[in-house]
Structures are given as C-alpha cells and as structure tokens.
Amino acid sequence: MQLNEQPASGFNMKLVMTFSCLLWATLITLSYCWNLQKNQEQHVATLLQAARSFFQQIEITREWNASHGGIYAPVTEATVPNSYLKTPLRDIRVGPDLELTKINPAFMTRQISEVAQKHNNIQFQITSLNPIRPQNAATEREKAALLLFEQGQAQEIGQVVKTGSSPAFFYMAPLITGKSCLQCHQDQGYKEGDVRGGISVTLPYTPLSFSVPLAAGHLGLGLIGLGSILFLGVKLNRAYSTIKHQAIIDALTGIPNRRSFTERFLEEVKRHKRNENSLSLLMCDIDNFKAYNDTYGHSAGDECLLQTAQGIRKSLQRSGDFCARYGGEEFVIILPSTKAKGALRVAEAIVANVRNLAIRHEKSLPEQYVTVSVGVATTSTDQADFSEILMKQADTALYQAKNSGRNCVRVFAESSQEQPVAGDPDFGVTD
Image 1 (cartoon, rainbow, N blue to C red):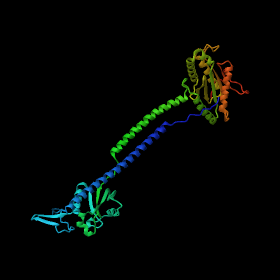
Image 2 (image 1 turned 90 degrees about the vertical axis):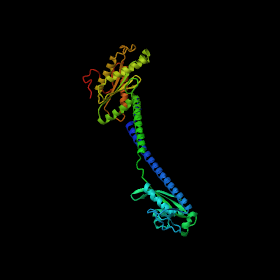
Image 3 (image 1 turned 60 degrees about the horizontal axis):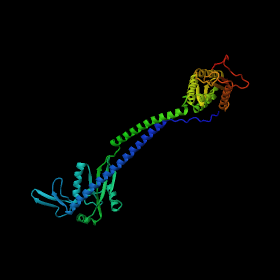
Image 4 (image 1 turned 90 degrees about the horizontal axis):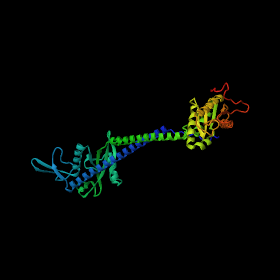
C-alpha cells in the first residue's frame, strides 16, 4: 500500500473576497476620477463655446456699428464724448437740453463690457499691440496671444488661468481689419485683412474637485458591486466547502476517505518525528464481504459498510484518533501517541463493537454475523521511510488476522519480539 496521494492545496476564500472587494473599490475609485476628469474637460469645453459665442456676438454688434459709421447716443455722466475719436461730427447738439455723441465700435465694446461685468461677472477687453486709447494696451497674456494671431499660429486661445487668488477661463480671438474699420485705423498703417487687435473674454471658473451626483452614482454602483461580491463569495464558499467535504469524506460511509487519510497520516508522521513518541496504525477489513454482497445484494452491502464504519468510529475515544475508509471493505485507523498495547485495546474494541452490531451474514461461519479482522502496527523509529514501513506492517498483521480465522486482531512484531495478545497484564495501556 503506497502513499501516492498528495495533500490538497489550501484555498483562502476570505483572502479572495478581500482582494476582490479591494479591486472593485479601486476600479470604482478610478472610474470616478476618470469621469470627474472627463466632466472637467467637458466643463472647460462648455466655457470655450460660451466665450466663443460672446465674442461672436460682440463682433456682430461691432460690425453692425461700423456699417453705420458709428451710432449716436445722448451725452450723460456714463457716456461722455470719446476724446480719442477724431471726426468732425463726433458731437451734435439737437436742442438746448440734448447733445448727442458718436459711439464707435471700440467705445461700444467698452460699455458692453461694463454691463456684462456688472450683471454676469464676465469681462470683455478690446486690446491691441498698437492701441489708440492707452487703456486698451494689451496685458502680457494678451500680448502673447496677439503675437500668435499675427504670426498665423493660432486662430483663438482658450485656457484656464490664475487671476488673483481664483482661477478663471480666458478666451481671446483676433479682430481682423475690415473696410469699415479703416475710417479710424488707416492712419495707424493697417490694411484690410490685418490683425489690428483682439477681444479677450474672461469667464468665472470653478474647478470640479467633487461632484455630488457623480459620487452618489459611483457610491451606489460600488455598494451594489460589493454586495454582489459578498453574496457570490458566500455562495462560492459554500460550494467550495461542499466540494472540499466531498473530496475528503467518503460519500457512502460518512467517514474520511483515502485521500483524507493520506493527508492526516503524513501530518501525524511529521508530528511523530518532532515529538519522538509512538504512532500506531490499524488496518481493518470486513470478513467475507464478497459473499455478503453476493448473498444480500449491493444495496445491503452498502448499508453494511455504513454501519461498520460507524461502529469503528464509535470505538475511538480520543479526539486525536482518526479513522477512514481506505477502499472497498477496508478501513484504516491512526492512533497518535499510542503504543502497541494501547492500539491492541482499541483494535479489540473495534472487533467487539462490529460483532455487536449483529448484522446478519449467514455465509460467515461460525458466527453468521458480520465481523472484522484488524492488523496493528506501532513504531517509534526515526527512519526516513518509516511511514511506508508502518503501512506494510499493518497490512501484514491484517493478513495474519485473516489467516488466523478472521474476527480477530493481530499485532505486527519483529521475529525477536513477542506478540501482545488480549489478556496480557499490560493490555489496554495507552500513552
């Protein structure tokens, strides 16, 4: 009898579930950050489109103003004559209480900017590298943009910038000199089609560092995922436990199977080597079992195996003792820290308990009941291969019990040693 099975590998379901939950939480977090970044980019794209629309509306309004050669408005505290507008008809008095002044596109843009900033906190700025009005001089950021426009390297600029202590969205596009623009700008040397300046638009900007709807959605999805992982993990753990149970428990008798015995026996051998104590092994076989199957049928044979297995298990008194079905009608029992005389006591108890089950077997003479034969082997050796030796010794002792008329126990002993038997004064002593 060879120990050719290998111990089953362990499976830590708790570790797998923990890893799965951490992985899922990481994926949800990455998804949230990715979506937040995409929302941020969409927010910037929306601001770009809004700034572009503002610029286009101003440009259309300026074109309308320029097409009329400017428009006239009453002179007030807010609208005073433009000292930088050189035209003979800049101011017109139409009555004792009414004086009109011409509003050119630049002046109009400045006034629209004041209204927009007051109501929407949106800033417009008409600017140039060569302004007529000094207040329209370009800032450093606007200068950089105008140079790009003049060099043909950009048609518009849109970016998030830092203004003071808070960020803002900055947009700028060029003003192209048209025929109507030459009335005021021809003296500056501009020609039709030249970039004579630009209009910058500054919009309020709030970074999306946190999004409640997005966070709520991902939190809900995360909880659903974690719940599913835990639910499936519990189901899988139960399924694994069932498979593991089936792998180590004999389905017919309900006691451990041969594979489970191999694992346990190797563990006990290692413990025996460490502690240098005795280790006993019992091989047990149902007598005349083939005849029982032939006489009563396989269903009755299965019931006989079940009852015999339970009778053997009830014969073991210590929690460390172990019994398993080794194959067919054969069983094996491990008795840790047990000398030969103690092992003999347990073996005799097994024989007696099975006989007391009174399972009818008319072909088993002379008892006519189901009986078992048991072979016992004990070792305290430290040989490297003594596990194989112990198995062979127990098997040899079982063979001797069969040849001795069955329904009995035989203890393997070297030729120089005396066989322990029932009735010995030291019989039944266990470490």
